Image 1 (cartoon, one colour):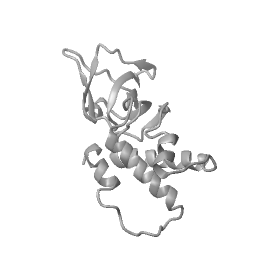
Image 2 (tube, rainbow, N blue to C red; image 1 turned 120 degrees about the vertical axis):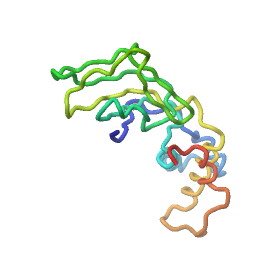
Image 3 (cartoon, rainbow, N blue to C red; image 1 turned 90 degrees about the vertical axis):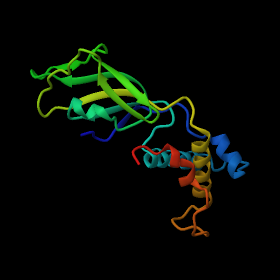
Image 4 (cartoon, one colour; image 1 turned 180 degrees about the vertical axis):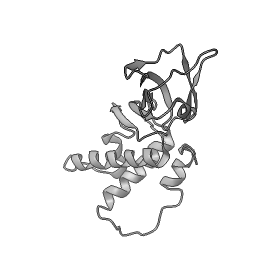
Length: 184
């Protein structure tokens, strides 16, 4: 079983920059800059949770119970594996050699598999295996950026729980993100 991923090193670049968002929303001054940044972060977090994917390069810490869980990683796309650590049967922390496993990444889905003629080591019962991985890419796809701008625009215009228009925009955020959702 995989546990909730944590971000060890956040993305250095956002899905959408503050300047792009301000241009999109036709904001001409700097009075709302802190709110713009907050809403952009909220839009990005929503998109990543909704899609189950990371769109900007960041380092994640993933924890699971067994090597069998490696058949499908809980986050994607995974660009690389930095390390895999575990407790051996004596309770000592060990780092798994990269000669034992390989990353198989196919779009947003990824797995860690044994290399030929290798075996997984024995792990202390009840302990967790920790995978440190780089997920995401250098830039987000255009449709993900467009969805982030739409979501930002909605949040900026409707600063309360219920806005003026109570219906979704056709071909809106969900439609733009539909091809980027994992496991659906």
